[in-house]
Image 1 (cartoon, one colour):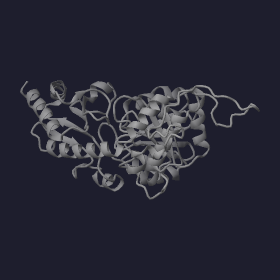
Image 2 (image 1 turned 90 degrees about the vertical axis):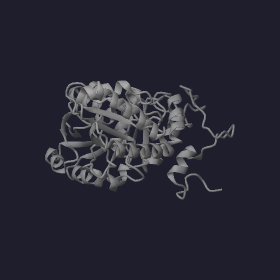
Image 3 (image 1 turned 60 degrees about the vertical axis):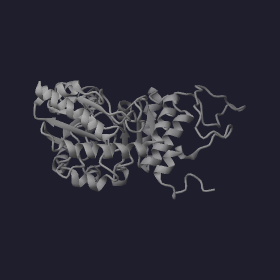
Length: 387
């Protein structure tokens, strides 16, 4: 019988079977949850099992990490207690005085952290429009810039950055490239194949996909000294993902391919229909040929353009807030990547300093019937316009 690590099996197949591991004792096809926090020493006081204590390591966590590494084509992966803890582990593995170049459009909580708390660690950040290669190059300080951080497609404007081009610029300046690929997922984009050094996911979103786990994930192109520093940070401060959460993450990833395909198909249909809607001024979605980053997205995203899009409304902020208040099927909630479709007036959440326009609604398309999703939001837009 062919083993699951045989390169002939597709990623879809491997993730569906969680790498095909069968529990040795029970022969269960679902991996068990390892909850133990401490482990027995051998007679000579060694730990030949490889496990010492629950804070730095866990077998269920290792199994989740193996799946993430397979999906990203990575040398190794880590799962952490949240997307923010995963990102922070990378930044806090830099040295005081190091310089970072980061996308202007990115997850708002991470941007706020870089603007505030990161400074206390001696990390200086220059924010740029990462889709502007000249701006990225101008922001680099060779020898001092140690990390370039991009998000593509970038939340909530869905800006697309050329990973390969930015990787060349970063490496030419002696810096690493890290990519937040939460919205793309490894089913659509594998940044390491385009020259990135590290990939980050808020695994709360698509990797888990059921809105019931908070988790983060990192994957690396190589297990070098910097990766060891990241791992040391996770071990020392205890930001490892809990075993039950790791189990749920594994469960979620088993349907990743199916969920992403459904979300991509629904988002593409909705983007096309709302692009011609009378109350919508513009649709921000990389799958539309009119999107400025469409050509790059078509080159580095395979199988679809993601399940996220944003609508800018002709009625401005009042229409956006009003429409979000009138939906029935869509859920007014923060987050993305779940099986249920979510809608949010993003500027209200991000607050002062947000690059998000006040007339914008962010949509996370789930796996529902696109006709139902369109009808629900269309009715809400018309009602908001009348009022």
